[in-house]
Length: 587
Image (cartoon, rainbow, N blue to C red):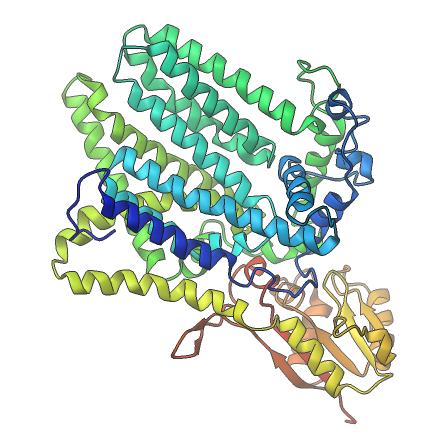
């Protein structure tokens, strides 16, 4: 990271720097871990917490392996639609009982889940360093680790009890083992013993990735391509077959042990998939249809492939200037790759082993491009679906900084200033965890300013306000709730009912932009509802805005907010949504 420090591999200084990076990473990921004050404002977290709460420990190992009987199978706990892996849930359940001294509670599950999510992301910070050191040097490795530690999306996802950090940790761990296999391809001594242990590690980490989230299988082509260099060494074909078989077997065993629900029978070596699981995946795929008007998916109907996710990566997932630097790093890596290929061709494929480190860089580049293009052209373009490329972007960006920027910029003070600038954006982001959640603030405003007995609105598919505070719920104030089903298809019947409700409503409360940020973008599908929001915001509906509660990322010291209303919905609606409140007027 600091190229003006000249030290040898294994020296004391890089170890200290790595510890400092991990310490800073820990602070960024654990600060404000109870960011919603036990109100459970993340819907995916709520769901996973409920599932963990409903799971029971099996009495025997045989019962655990039997998907029809296992009490650790969500299907047997009443959750018939479950598409996540069960390994993170089992781990969180066990850790919750250990950490809280068996005081198993709904709140404890969520908090322990967030803690473990953060720890897995810290593991990614460390693995990024290990991979960077394998293929470059310690300075570049430290830079890569620092870059990933400062990336905003990983920091945010570490604050959530979800499966994303588990998934990416095992993907990066798989890549680490794959890189070791590639580099060991130079050697011909102890081939099978080396290949055995590394292939077991590769298969185990890949299997645990599948047991965390099924989309791990998207990484399989990278693994397949990464094993190719084995073929070009002595006894290469036999070693390749050996590594492949060991990888497949260890992957299967780990999936079978850590998520038996995926399989149909209790027989350990029966690979037949569970029909319920397959049905769940098909149902999930069907919801990603722009014509179905599935509420959470409306936001993506008009988004542009590639452009929309790219904007979110640059502006919010990484933040400026890191986002722009990372894009430049990808183009730089593409150029270097073409030059390396040209050299290989000109040498008539002689001494291929000398290019193996460059081949690992090629794999990093291919994974970034492959996943980004694949996810960026899908209908569903959630930011977390691009998350698996972030550690790999950090590695390429670090190499670009060391090879290009450090060569151009000779002033060490200027270089240090540039690195400090990278800290501003993550500090601005975690500023949202230094204050009450915007929905908590809005709830306090409601209790203080809206009279008892008033009729207030709630939007279907979003959280209702006010939240229960200080031991009191809205029932204590006798508030009446009218739920507006505005995601329903626009029909005369829908608006006949909605207009009837609006006559009763004293205050319209929108607890996030989940509806008003999505529906007006598709006026062809929601002409009446889009007009409703347009008139409401223009105060043409006898409702006047009386409160706007935000919790934007804020640059510290200068107290400059960074409005992120244009970001992907999932980036804002969980931990810092904008709340709007409109009061009925006499006009």
